[in-house]
Amino acid sequence: MADVVTALPRRVSPVQLAFLGSLLLSLLAVAGTVTLAKDAARYLYVSQQIVEQGPRVAFELFSWPWFSLLLAATQRLFGISLELAAYLWCAFLMAGTCTLLVAITQRFVIGSGYWACLVVLSIPAFNQLRYDIIREFGFWFFCTLALWLALRWLERAGWLRALLLQLAIVAAVLFRIEAVLLYPALVLCLLADLKTRLAWIRLLQINLLPLAGLLFAVIWLLSGHALSQERVDYVLSLVSPQNFLERFNLMASKFAEVALAKYSADDARRIVFFGLLLTLISKFVALCGPFALPLLYRPGWRGVGEFWHRLRPMAWAWLIYFGLLLIFFVQERFINSRYVSFLNLLVVPLLTLFVVSFARNFPRLAKILVILSLLVMLQNVVSFGPKKTHYLEAGAWLAQHTHPADKIFYEDSRLAYYAGRGYPYMPFDREQAMSAEQAQNFRYFVLIDKPGDAALQRWMVQQHKQVLSRFANRKGDTVLVIGD
Image (tube, rainbow, N blue to C red; front, top):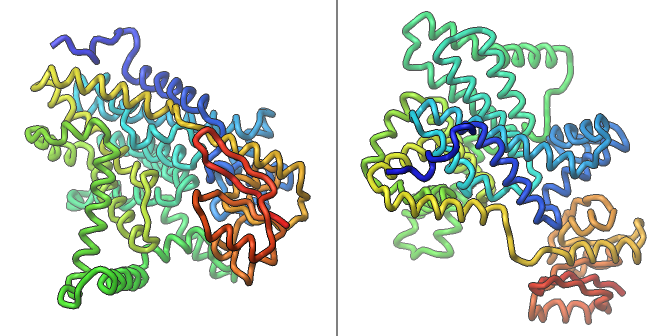
């Protein structure tokens, strides 16, 4: 078949196409952005405080502020705005991730470079987040870099390669602490060969920094200092077997009380476990987008064994991260596409293998798959829906008509950010803030209007409050400013 994908100009290599294509897609995504997402506003606020007050304030505002420190340093060095610095970092980190994934895939599936580009640039899992400013971009890039270095290190061991690999993992950890999962993944890759002297040397090489860190921690503790960090303590509490079992049993018992007859109560744990498991798997498959179709092609599954053999670090990382997501799901009782997307990133080479096998046997359907992929590629970065312009208008009104000292409850802290009032942490949700005990502590309430909310009308009458201003976008989504 005159392959639609491999017919691309040979002057542009797959890795170059992945890098340039990724930058173009990020530009399109950011160009259509009007307001920041919640986490983005928080990171930029922390960065601004670092610029104004120094780096010490970072840990007071956020437990893992390394991304914000990077943005603040960039702003000071180059004099560009924090928002521009953030978008540039995210775009180039994403482009680097796509490039590395294509480079890894080309070595795994010979002649798959342009197909790998198609998968990398259109799979919804991480491409649909290009408009955002999130730590995941750094996490994805340095994890992928570490995996690329790991594959080379497994082929040809060396102390320098091992050191560079560990430094990449450390850099990934500075964005998201979950990146430590790469260490056990690499150790598991070596277990089958521990009968040889070379495997033991490699095991020592890959544990240089962890051993150095452990030694430092012991010395630090012996010198009388405390060793505690909020984010680290939180992660340790999540993976604690005791905490996990307690939350899982609580979830199962609540489910049995609400949804099961007493005769089926004994099956609650099994139902909850497999329900969570299937939810994770279904999210993973959905985030594959059009590339979930080749997964139905049975002969393609023959490549799973080859994937496990040749890309063991990625396979082990997938299994470990899947387990971490399941633990998180039980502990926090929610999961979202942003967290699951790393699973899809890890299997890009395998998905590409499925696509290549599918295209080889179904050339006509492959053309349809290419068209669908290109449409999804655009859908990921171009949105024709109404923007949150009412957030900007509400923020401008608040900046003009309220004082910084006023006690204001923000249902969405981005409204405070656009009013120039920072990014306040709200210890209460909407219902708690409007309760009789808390309502008197706030002069203004900035709320997201819910159509037909009779309870809000009754509350305003009881509290002698009124709508001071109302802001809506084209869709009709509305922000209310309520006060005396």
